[in-house]
Image (cartoon, rainbow, N blue to C red; front, side, top):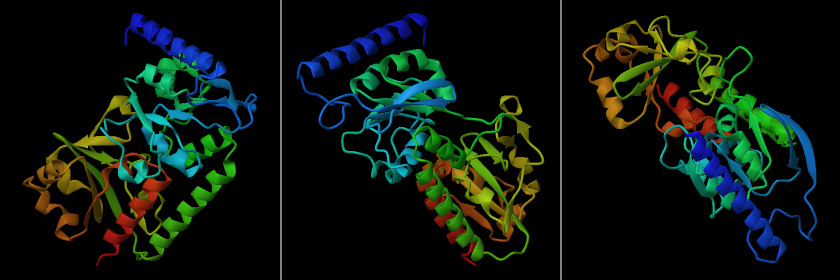
Length: 328
């Protein structure tokens, strides 16, 4: 987005917010971020990934700048009023949308947010992952208090949803809710493990995409941390393939000629679409892959749950993993 465009969006967003506040003060109706009985909201000062902010202690109109965080917000007991779509998706998955209020509004995408639409929702708090929020931080802060959480740790490794929910639980003063969801996740994974033979078997995660196959490593957030957390089946790192994004991405792109060298007893395929899955299966070497010959290949059914991690997604992934790995 060009600098003039950003300035125009800022003017429109701030003007819209001011106009809404004026209407509210004059009894003009609309959504209000005031507690019952009038008066100002109670606030608290918090540190976040991009600085410090004074936020409501009990925010009522939360907007997210990346829809992948909706799962976590729901788990923390917050009902967001809007979000920007993340990850190239065109709509929210059903397992998320069924938990959202009827007037929930999509405000563009994470890469091209509709800032006027954000302002029109009259949020009392805006939340997003740091690399997304930083692009429009000054604009967003002109609309409502804004906080960001970390995408990566100090070593540059992508953080999973359990780290995200812990961080957001601290920021939003809902650490107990975060602890409960993580504990429930750990119990569910332990239950899956209890149904698996402790035979030392390994599993690899392959993502079938248009025109490429990705071999994901153990630091990735793909699978909502389920496969990474199993004890009786070990997730493996790719020993070959082309690194991308300067080596920072948690996968390597592999050629179809390398499929027979995938070093695992099991393979979990996460296809972007049915077409991509069939393209992988139609490769000449696919039937020669050891895991395929042993009938030990699983296919992700709910792509969004694998790709957009969170506690709700983890429940779905855990069910899929358990069903496939215990099918025999």
